[in-house]
Image 1: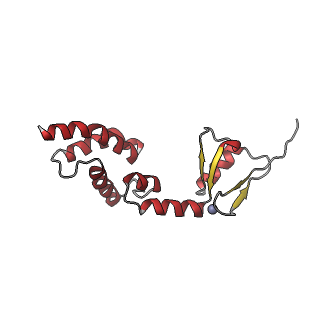
Image 2 (image 1 turned 135 degrees about the vertical axis):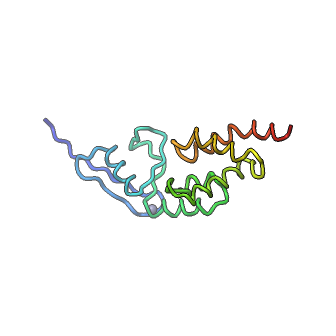
Image 3 (image 1 turned 30 degrees about the horizontal axis):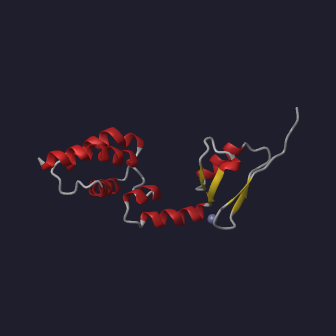
Length: 148
Ligand SMILES: [Zn+2]
């Protein structure tokens, strides 16, 4: 059996922060452990491949990016920034609901509450972004009926 010594060094795309794996690490496991520590990777490959990483953010740079997204007025930016997390937080859920209804154009619509319930039932198991997807899907019907 041939023992191959290999290490991987990952460097942040925006600052000098870097981290090197232990010897003989599996690349995928190394990346997973970094993700658990807050590192973020942009790539089109799954599972992730060394040569196909487009952008790396260390935990500090990723926090700066997410904080900026959370301050945005866009519900889509806020979702990406983790603004509504943790998902069990009741106050954050109420804020998401209000923002979602407004973003989809159902604010003031008397069927908004029922439409949101429907979207929640169909989407919440896969997260807020999926609830928003379902709300957008059902909104056209709700808006149409409203105008009749
Ligand atoms: Zn960085």
